[in-house]
Length: 209
Image (cartoon, rainbow, N blue to C red; front, side, top):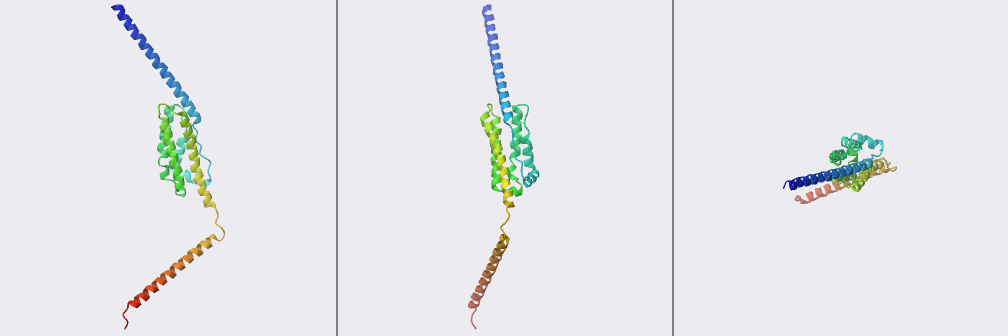
């Protein structure tokens, strides 16, 4: 009976060792995979903010939310995937309010739409980086798309500056003033005509003596 018992314990011991080896092997594979993913994303992680016109730069420098968002996104994590996850969480929080407090000079639907799309892309990147199996291709694609949206925001602002700088044609101001004067005169003449008409009607209603 005793030899069987010893054999049984020996079998359990070897099975336990095999399971430990499998766990260690799986852990090593997971660690290696994470290291590869981290290395790949680290190489791709670069966000570009275009050099802008002085008018745009002045507005952005006074826009605290954008300044904080830009600084946060430009700082690349250097240690682990956890660092990337924490980084994108902070960026996502800072991007949430961008479309709600655009500087007055650039507060138009086109700029706000770009900022909303930018925030959506960042939130998607946040989601992908927190998956157990991180889809590298989708992460790379989103990084490119976020850069395109950042560029798009600057392009929209640049377009506003260009339109504001376009000089009016010669005589355009005089024409506008003449049209306004004509409208005011016509409006006054119309009011006087209505007033006279009402006066005549009142006179007609009065009993004749």
